[in-house]
Amino acid sequence: MTVEDRRRADEALDWVRRLHDPEFVGWDAHLAWLEADTRNAAAFDAASAIVSEASEGLQAAGRWEGLPRPTNDNVAPVAPRRRYRGSLAGLAIAAGIVGVVALPTLRLHGARSYELRTGPGEHRSLTLGDGTRIALNGETRIRLDPAAPRVATVEAGEAFFTVTHDAAHPFEVHAGNAIFRDVGTAFDVQRQGAVTDLAVKEGAVLFDPDGAAVRIDGARAIHVEGGTAIVRNVASEEVGGWRTGRLSYRDATLAQVARDVARAIGRPVAVAPELAQRRFSGVVMIDPDHGLTLRRMGAVMGVELEPVGAGWRMVPPTR
Amino acid sequence: MAGDGLAAAFATHRAQLLRYLRARGAGEEAEDCLQDLWIRVQTVSTDMATDPRAYLYRMAHNLLLDRRRSEVRRGRRDTAYHDDVQAGGEADEAPAAERILIAREKLRRVEATLRGLGARTDHIFRRHRIDEIPQRDIAAELGLSLSAVEKHLQKAYRAIASLPRTDLFAHDVPIDGKGGAA
Image (cartoon, rainbow over all chains, first blue to last red; front, side):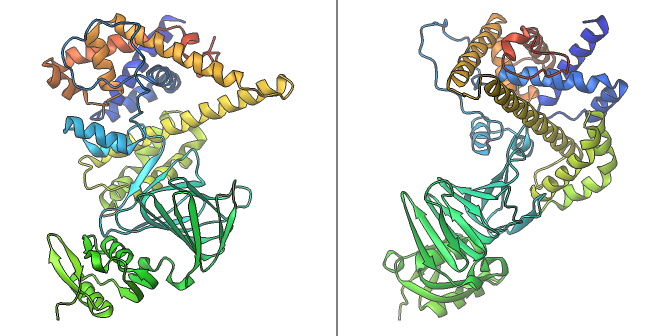
């Protein structure tokens, strides 16, 4: 290594340190350094790879609590640290501990995969590089990984997929332990806790493609909970109706309806226990005026909606 | 809210971002990276991004890190495949088990190196690198000046970088194009 190479490597290493700071703003200076010599970019990548590789598996420091006790080499190894980068849950924990972390920077910082989320009542849609479209309902989190562009993970909430079919590279949607593989498709995926519901509008989806390989055609839906899966019929025009503010039901529980409406309007909607299992068939139109939405809904369902805190609660009619 | 502010900032700084991607050695990939960046811009919520320009650069930087990482992974897979083929197509568990051992040994060496620099430096390095706490905040937590924190970090980075490459990249493809694993 020449003296010049050594100097370049030292500079690159210091840029790696500076850029790793979530508050780094010296991009102009960084660009100037990169452009000063075409070899600088490679030196930066090399230094970056070395430090990343060396940091892999290191334990988080946490807050400083004074000098540590003398280390004892016989101490059982601590369970592998959950890696924070790329994991929004992890980042949220880190942010919770220190309380001062700038979230927007952290959210993206060094993330291998990234998360898209919508707030309560917010809709968002995006088109992936292959033309696949994903529409996110309110309070939804999905994870995408540039290294695996034909996979989307629904972590919570509901999303509607219009997949650009490629038989050689089938698109997969993961939700909890459930894996769905498209066979040329538009379909809706909902995830609530440990329960996953998928409904196919057009085309077909394979559930558990490498195992049971259950084929779900258009106008069919599958309910996956624990080790069991139940397939049922649905009206295909109902699938993904939330995108246009139209929620259609056939023999759904009021608990299910309340959950969907809550997601659509971004406010909690509770159900009195005695009503939770009551059945409903019909359409709920979501109006920008939430009060109107709920009055209509109450009228259609024969229940009353009483305001509770920031939301509403379905109760039996008082009359 | 979709990132209108960020989208506008993207339009304003598009040429500069492309220049940055090129300067980072993205070459012919640069336009492709910019396209990826645009997709990400459309999907992030920006109400919290106080400095959209810095935020865009940060996204571009992360995008490049992602791409480099998948290149390395691809390289590793190809290497493993060739090893199998050369061994007569009989893949077995040994390489994976061996890799785990190597990874543990690597971690042990890195930890020993950091410990050797003193508890403060060790803490500051992990606080910065793993916890991803801004250097300014680390300084405040420890009652140190920012430049003192920077000095601790520079010491740790230099120590890490001067570890023998064989300790870090035993199973990897060369990263600098001239036999970094040697």
